[in-house]
Image (cartoon, rainbow, N blue to C red; front, side, top):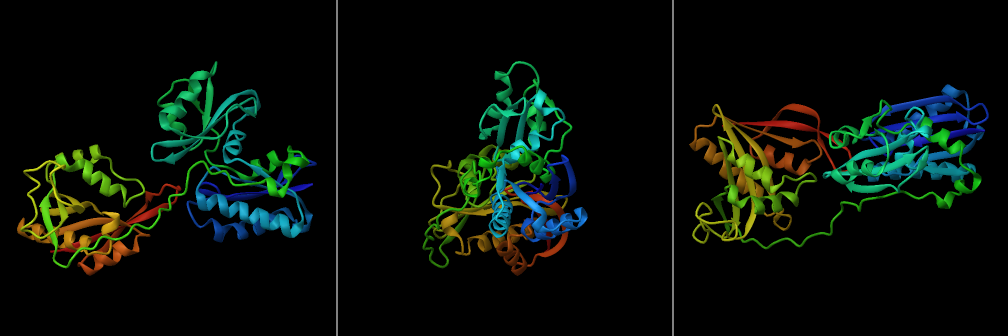
Length: 391
């Protein structure tokens, strides 16, 4: 019997055909791929079938990873496998992505293995396997909680996955594995060959989500009268408020300490947009973060050798589309000219089209690119577009 395995849960996309009778991989195609799984998977499957000299009607069982992983990635592979299972009337087996990487460890059936994926936000998807069997359930843990899993186990624990290095640094009982850190569909198909028929019921294969989706309910927008914006200097004393605003606009927000550290660096400055006109605004240089007016957004920048870099710009969720970002950019530009700054630089994610449009309208042009600079919570990587404004 031939088994078709697929995986799209993490930053890779793969398909493989496994001959269960001869216990060997007939063909396998694995591609590191932070995004684009939906477009790539059909072609990868067809290529794998051609390499094995097989057709869909030669397949006797299907297998797919079910998570944990990116929300889109988990859905793509599972939806494809379910579609094939329904169309071909084939049994379908679900394998967790954590078991898939654990099984890639050499002689894992004689070892204790911690499989761990970096889930971002200082969290980890983790699971312990002992002699090839799950010793814990798949869990979403803090980095320190994940590292401490090995404390309850006698002897050495081998660790595999994208979080392995960061966890091994926190616990000397963890030994880094040389096995691949991302799932491989060849292993998924092999594991499926060992599953009984009762494990291959189509309706029983469900996605494994350990974290809630990041989608948020729409927030009502503030009513801000035209011209009713004021500007104040922000300092490290306002870092808590700035961090709260930053968290509303970024998937990997800056902490209050990170903001305070940035503002303490020589050449750094920050401007805070407040609701109310200049006459009503309070001077935040004289007040603590509890005393200021209604903060709507801020910009942090740093000046070096006559040039300015915008480190971050954030606007409160309910103040979006109220020209707050434009107000901050224009104020920052005027300040730069007053301080004889010749150029202003910034970086913006390639998928942040609204911000790119705003920057272009304010005189910025693209001048460079940093590949895979930004990483979202689902593991997707995006290029950073470097933009420049000559003053």
